[in-house]
Image (cartoon, rainbow, N blue to C red; front, side, top):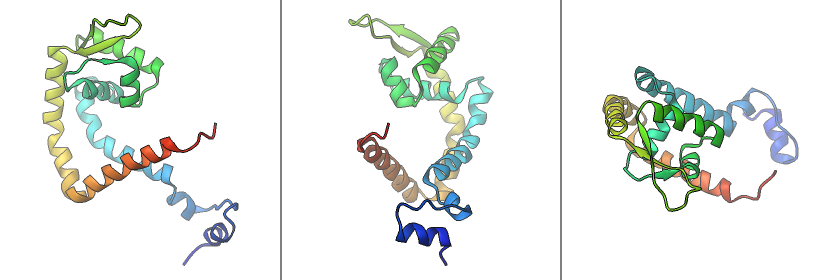
Amino acid sequence: MKTESAQAFQTDPEAIPSGKEYYERSLTVALLRARESTMRRFKKYADQEDLSLPQWRVLRALADGEALDAGTLCQRCVILPPSLTRILRALSERGLIMPVECADARRHMVTLTDSGQALFDKLVGASQETRREIDHAFGEEKMSLLLDMLNELRIVTDGLPSND
């Protein structure tokens, strides 16, 4: 049975639905809740190594061995430039990343140090069981489909006209 607000929205797309049902079916709220629920399971691993979750994302982005510039890291890790500057400083002070020379002096390229790679490997190993538990509980096929759909949603929404 549909609520009045849901019925009003279907008959008048300009109407703004309200109420609990509308909130519970909100894409942004559902994404935030899923993120928080999932990240809670992995945060303990970063905490054990005194890493923030954004620092962990940077290590993950660099873990394939390719040196990356700050702009690429911001994009891949979904981190704003001022925050990335602080993160890179902290990771560098801990000896987990190091700068890499680049022909373009305007680009700040970094890569993992051996210590950074070792920490990444340790965290991946420690969190592997949690990842398997989630995949098993949710279903590996559904997880694969969800990831594909989330990536497709990002591509589609990135391609929409800006509403700024």
